[in-house]
Length: 114
Image 1 (cartoon, helix red, strand yellow):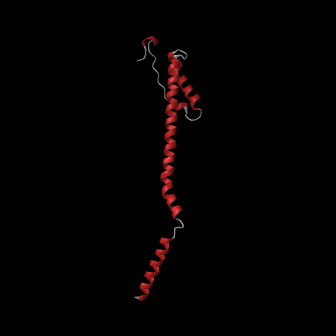
Image 2: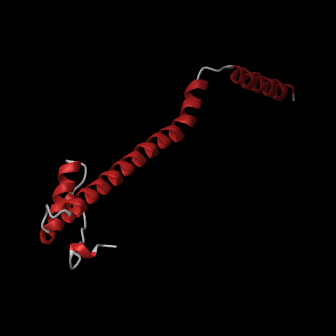
Image 3: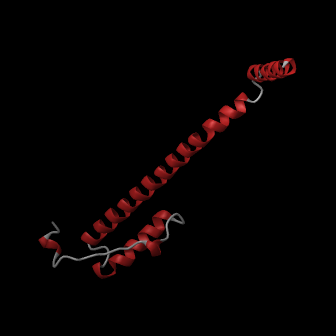
């Protein structure tokens, strides 16, 4: 029975020694915090790219609608002109072949669109 008691005391002493050591505490804390932190950083970057693309698409549509309304672009070729404008504005960020453009020209520009 005495040997069992000394074994338990030895285990207890080792556990207390481990509790006092803080050698890897920083690494463990970093491992716990790193995944949510980097996830948040990448989510912010993804959201920024989304707003960038959204804003440039709005600008391309606005510019082309103004050009069509002032008759600087033929309404018959408006869809290809919008795709070309998007390709020029985005460079390599967006594949213009994946952009779907639909256009319905009014009977006359004097009638107004809306």
